[in-house]
Every structure is written in C-alpha cells, then in structure tokens.
Length: 452
Image (cartoon, rainbow, N blue to C red):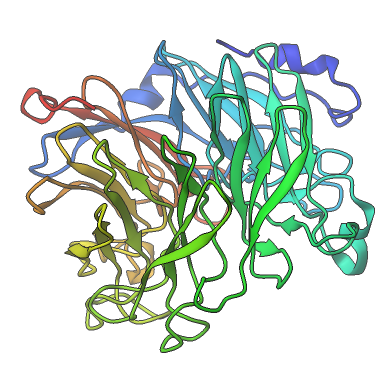
C-alpha cells in the first residue's frame, strides 16, 4: 500500500507550502550503520535517518507493520509545512512509509490550523486506511485562545494519501460538556469500526478522558478522570478485550505518596463502570506508568512504570528510580517482572510492550544503557524479558550520526522475529542531537525461533 509523496500534492488546501519530495536513503546509508548488539544475537540496520523539513523529523512513536512488510509511522516535527500555523517553526509533523524494499516516502504533511499537528502516537491500519491522533491542531478556534495551539484531532488517511479529520477535540473551550484534550495515545478498534482512546487532559476535571469515536465521526466521552483513586493523565490509551472492556494505565492519581499520585491500572467495563485494578506505591513496584498496556491470550496485562523501583539506580535527575516491568494477571494479582538499574541496563520505559506467543516481552527504555552517551543520561536500549522473567539487552543505542538515541516509542515484531522501531533523536539533521532514526534489529536463527 505505497503512498507516494507525489499523490499528496493535489491537497492544495493542506499543502499550501508545497509537497515534500520522496527521500530514499542510499544503500550505503542503510548498510553502513549495521552493527552487532552485544551478545543478544541481533544486528541493527538503520532504515532511515530523518533530516527535518521537508523530510519528517523526531518520531516519538514506533512503527506498525502490514502483511506485505511495509512500515508506517509518524513524526511530531518536520514535513513540508515548516512554519506550522498555530504551532512552532520546526514543522507540523508527518506520516511516513518505509516499504518492504526499504524505500522511504513522506506520505502526508500536517499543516496545523486548519489541519492538525504533532502526532505523538503510532498508527492503526484498518482495511487499507490509517487512523491516528494528533496531540494539538484542529480547527476549534477557542482552543487557540490565550496562545494555545489546538486541542488535538483524530485523523484518517486512505490508500491514495487523502487525509480527513474524523474528529476535532474541544477541551473545555468550545463544548457544552467537557471534552477531552491532547490525545497522545494510539487508537484501538472494534468489529463495528468504532475507535477508542484516551486524552491526557480535558474532561470534567481536566485530568483526561477515555473516549469513543464512531466511523462517522461522532464522539462520546466514556469516562473523565479525577486524579483521585481512579487515577489521572492516561497518556497511552487502552486495550480492549473480547467482551468490550477497556484497560489502561494512568500516570498520576491513586497513592498520594508520590507528587500528584503514583498512578493506577484501571478497567472500564463495557457498561461504563470504571474500576481501579491496582494502585502503585511508588516503591519497589514502580510508579507513574506512562506507557500503555498489552494483553496476552490468557488475559494477563503487562506494562511498565516509568519511575521508582530501584531508587538507587544511576539515572540522572527527575523522579527517583529507573522504572519497572510488571504483570497483572486475570485475578488482578500484581507482580514485578523486572526492575531497571540504569547503565548498562535500561532506564525510564515510556511505551507499551509487545508479547509473543511464548510469553516473551519486548520493549524499549528511553534512557539507560551506554552511560557515555547523551551527556551521561545514556541513550536507551531495546530489551527482552523472557517467560521466566530473565532480561536480555538486545541493543544499546550509541547516538551520533551512525545510531539513534532516546527511543520514546516501542517496537514491533515480524514473523521472523525481527524488531522495528524509532528513536526521537540521534542520526543527522538540524534538530538538537539529530532528527531521529528508524531501525531494524535482525534476529539470528537462535533468536527467531519463537513466533510473534
């Protein structure tokens, strides 16, 4: 489902600043950065080094993979519209594709107001159409009052590259009933084509919402967080079970022992009742779960807590501790699977995990790893935790022009066990510290025996 940048030029109302050219890295660019990742059995290849406008820049989210082996992702900066209306001068962000042959295309350039900007989340592909969220932008004028840059949107892009705003959030500015604001999470779908997600802000108490949007664009706020026992700031969305129940993590609220609360794991039943399944203590269990959850076939939930855990680890600055990986089983029994220790281990996991059929977990940490990188904060790692709870570091990022640094997004995995993802910085380009990369970790034969 290749979307050439040429096809986007017809959208003159959106692309008044011009159409981004197709950017294809040379074979030397893709192969010169191949490196072995220690003893993990994985080898890294740089698929693309983002260059900023008119190229995309700064991918906060990971990538998704279709059945043909094409990758799709978003960036919060760059694109053809460098002077983003209602936003910043670093670009409005873009959607890109890396096809199965390794060719890179800018699929869509966001244009701020009257379009959207800053897609922080990964995409979802449904019957050939991409759906996603932007944290800001939209055309709700009151959301731009007092220096604002919009309340955020839900968008769709068809196979021809044509974009449509399916819904534009109103926050508490332009709606009679408090709407959500600042969606930073990927969407999930049901069999009827409805979309579900979260906003980090807005709602009745300004601590975020869970929402539903029909395929016709009608939105319903299913729940507004209060930052009490229910939690607050659900940054990274929800997962949905076969019965229509939604599960997610809230960054704040719950135990008041942390500043603003240590966070919660919640369930919103299909009938609309929210239950708090676990409240973080901000101790050895971790605290502040920023990433979302993943559910296995048995109904177990897995996730990460960004902070706490081992409070003596060597992370610089910020809240104490380097974070944890946890499991919440079907009986709501909580177990810590791994406590991050900084360097050479990882620190500060920011995104949802993936789980294979054997129960192995894969993810990233934004920091930790090589403590000579990123001014001592270290540049992050890709890790695996096997079904027995043993952690392996699959790749340690080294930054600079030849590698990425700070993977805010998670990873996706193909049928051969190869992993794909992004880093928000590193590589080349005029961005501070580089404009980020898209990477592939190729599994050796011994590493790829487990099915995804």
